[in-house]
Length: 114
Length: 109
Image 1 (cartoon, rainbow over the protein chains, first blue to last red):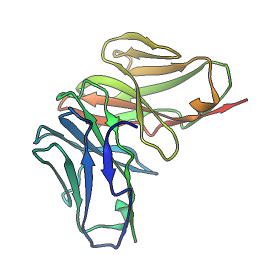
Image 2 (image 1 turned 30 degrees about the horizontal axis):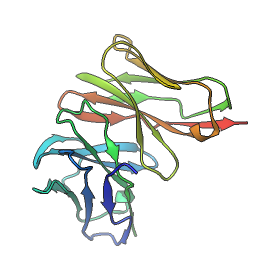
Image 3 (image 1 turned 90 degrees about the vertical axis):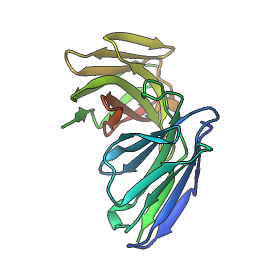
């Protein structure tokens, strides 16, 4: 158990819909990272937040957005969903602002878009 | 662009040593991570290299050569539980991370 929690574990929704994925980091970690893992593309870095502020941005689509709240939990919002958005979404937390420490991954949310 | 290459699959025998290679072509290199991921589970951290050389951690060691854009993960005394996917990840300036597609290792008796 990494100490990082993600909800829900599974999500099935239709194209065009909007969903919110939630992540709670390990106690004391200020950095939260979001990743998308699909079979054909491997693990893709989406975005990082540190103590409530966006710190780094990867290959995140404009239809996706994220935020980190004062209690440090984070949410990833996916809108106008397409079939290709079906993937495993991981959240990871770290004690480092600059990414030089290891990241602890949550169990993931499996999103299926039908 | 950023490019990270790893072999797709490897097979090794229990008790043996296996080396998993990773080559990368990135701009603004700022460190390399190795993660282990069992099927259906989250990745777990194995090692981090930012300077050239070998980092040893129990049965696992990781090597980095920045001039060659090359790293390897060495697993010794292989156990059946080491059957998993091994992900090479590069951190670049701007604090972005790029992962290889992973090497699926199968350990056979």
